[in-house]
Amino acid sequence: MRVFITGVSSGIGRVLARQLIAAGHEVWGVARREHQLKELRQELNSSKFFYSVCDVKNEKAVLKLREEMMKSGYFPSMFILNAAVDIEEPLPHLSTEISRETLRTNLEGALILVNLFIDHCLGKENCQFIAISSLFAHWPDTSSVAYAASKAGLTMAFRSLRLRYREFGVLFKVVYLGPVDTEINPRFAKQDGEKARYWVTSPENASRFIIKSASKPGHTFYYPWYVSVLIQLFGWLPDGLFEAITRSFKR
Ligand SMILES: NC(=O)c1ccc[n+]([C@@H]2O[C@H](COP(=O)([O-])OP(=O)(O)OC[C@H]3O[C@@H](n4cnc5c(N)ncnc54)[C@H](OP(=O)(O)O)[C@@H]3O)[C@@H](O)[C@H]2O)c1
Image 1 (tube, rainbow, N blue to C red):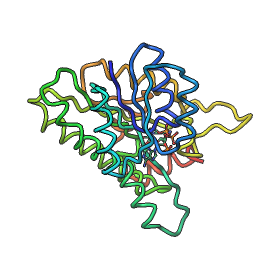
Image 2 (cartoon, rainbow, N blue to C red):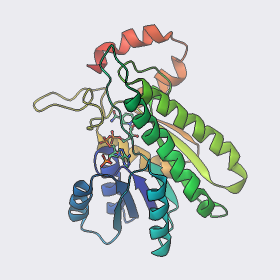
Image 3 (cartoon, rainbow, N blue to C red):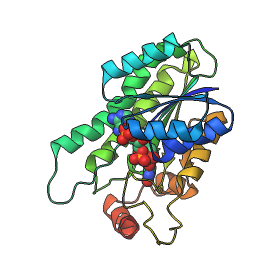
Image 4 (cartoon, rainbow, N blue to C red):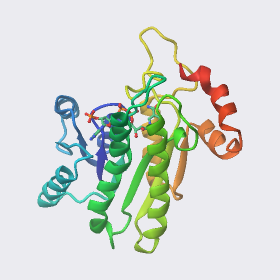
C-alpha cells in the first residue's frame, strides 16, 4: 500500500513511517524540519520511503508536492493527516499569532490536503483519509484554547466529508488519541528518570492502533480505551467538573 503522512519528522508520524515501512508499505512523508527528515531517511534506509519538506499551511507548497508525487507515479491510497502544533498559552494572556498558527496548521492544513487530493481518490477503491484527533476535540483545554478548537473543527470537517463523499467510496476516519509521550506537549512527554504514567501512552502503541484502524470497518476510533469512556460516556459532565478531575493529570 502507498501511504502519505503529514508530520513524520517526530513523534507519532515518525513511528508510523517506521512501522509501515517495516510492514512492507511505501510511505511519502512530509514535515518542515529537513534535518529530522534526512535523519529518518538514513535510519529507515529503504527505497520505499520518500519525503518532502513541506509546510501544510502553505497551499502552493502542497500543490507543488502533489505535482511532484503525481509525476513520479506515487498515488497514495491512504492519507494520514497527523501534522499539528499545540502551543501552550500561559495565563492570563492570549495570542492571536498562536491561535492563527494552531488553526492554520491543524485544521486548514488538513483541509488543504483533502481539497488537493480528493479528485485523485474519486472512483478509486479503498482510498481513505485518517485525521488524528484528540480528546480535546470534545473537552475544553485551558492551556491551549486554539488546539481544542482546531481538533473539534477537524473532527466536524471529517464528519461532513464522510457524508459528502459516501457515494464515491472515499473513507474519512477519525482517530481520537489521549495523552501520548511525544514532544508536542511537554505536559505528556516523559522526563529523564521519570516513571511511566499509566494514562500516557507511547507513540509506538498509538501508531500501531492507527495502522489497525486503517484496515477496520467503521470511522471513529479511540485510543487508549478510556478516551472512548471520557468522550462517549462522560460527555454530560459539566466542563468545570471535567477540568477539575483532569487538572492533576495535566501537569
Ligand atoms: N502527543 C499527544 O499527547 C497527542 C494527543 C492527542 C492527539 N495527538 C495528535 O497526534 C498527532 C501527532 O502529534 P505528536 O504527538 O506526534 O507530536 P509531534 O512529535 O510534535 O509531531 C508533530 C508533527 O507535525 C509536524 N508539523 C507541525 N506543523 C507542521 C506544518 N506546518 N507543516 C508540516 N508539518 C508540521 C511536525 O514536524 P515539523 O515541526 O518538522 O514541521 C511533527 O512532525 C497530532 O495531530 C496531535 O494533535 C497527540
